Length: 48
Image (tube, rainbow, N blue to C red; front, side):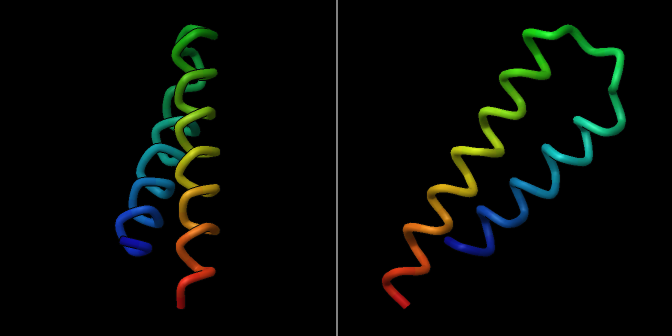
């Protein structure tokens, strides 16, 4: 599951950097998704 979070963070971050002219709403949503993925990954690390 941690690998999945990491891949999600990398993928979304790549698109954030690639599409800098995307709408503010889209960028905010993508950044929020990255933050949620990071928080979930940190929670999972507590179980290892």
